[in-house]
Image (cartoon, rainbow, N blue to C red; front, side, top):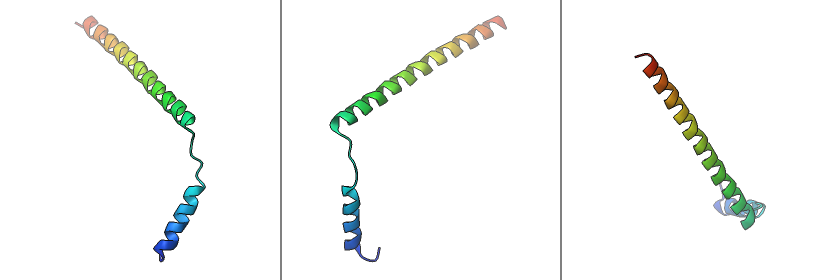
Length: 63
């Protein structure tokens, strides 16, 4: 990084090569991420509920 001006020119040149997603691609991808987060959350809620129920039953049997 001896020459900051040359560095900035190279950064600008590389930034022009980036292929940015379209608005539609961004919306679709964001929607899929939100959907997967909701699905994973629902899965873990169900697993947590089932484990809590199972442990509760085992503890009641042991009394």
